Image (tube, rainbow, N blue to C red; front, side, top):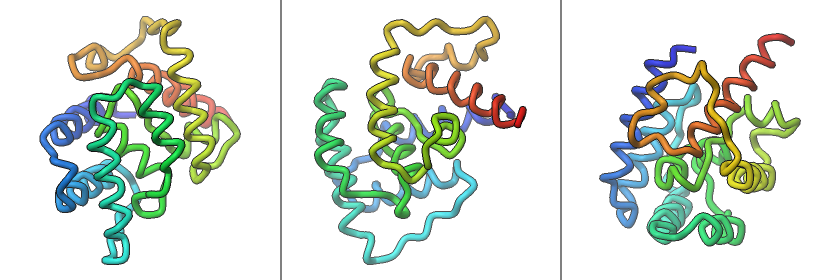
Length: 173
């Protein structure tokens, strides 16, 4: 994995999401397209998706300022939206909208936990599990220096370790 390019893209998306106004549909769409630019899959936006994007934008506005527990509870109670009908894309959007609350869920992580990338309930369980483990987390000596930069949350550090572990285990099979 090209850690430098990956982490530079991550930093760019964190910066972009910090200036987006999620009460504006166009900004929600811009965030969705940016997230999908960071993914191997292409975003297909249809006019019929507008209500979903509005709901996602409303949710992103609502969770700003909430603590982890309240934001996760609100997510569990309102997971009625998905970018491109994808839990993966939605998790990435939510991560950049609230990087200290929502981890990124992708096929490598889902497979590592014997799940499917489309399993919304498993993504919610993953969110909860990471937050339960986070206070005990220790970073490996081989941790990329870029992950110690400002703007990279402890949640992202933990999730990056899991992503790397999932990638390593997948390559051994």
